[in-house]
Image 1 (spheres, rainbow, N blue to C red):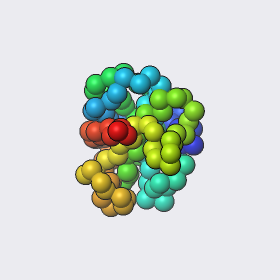
Image 2 (image 1 turned 120 degrees about the vertical axis):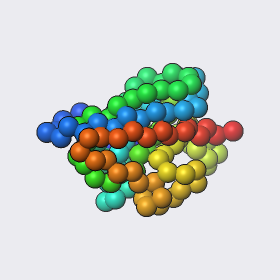
Image 3 (image 1 turned 90 degrees about the vertical axis):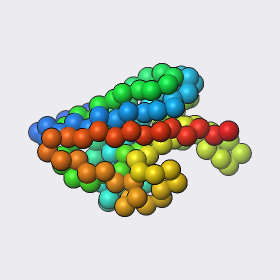
Image 4 (image 1 turned 60 degrees about the vertical axis):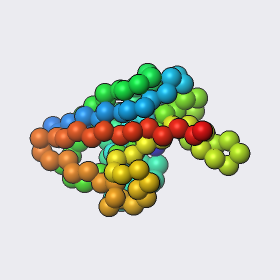
Length: 130
């Protein structure tokens, strides 16, 4: 995800925005990283567009700007320790995570959203380790 963030600031001539609502954000500090990944970028450290913001508990509303129309999976990580990677503890994920699509989705097809010329919105619930 961190590698994808560089795309967030590259800018482009496209006008579509994607409004991303994050629900269930824990008050762990750190940064929320949002990445839109194309089929070719899916589950890789790159993205077509993204944004980030300081994490605040509850519901957060972020906008990914200038997204080319197309199909994307929305990936979100709560980088609570601000190290730009998913931190693990005892071999398990130690930070919050979420994605577009239904809970438990594992494929691009199951997570994809379509971004038309006019933009779109998506809600991503966050899941935290217990």
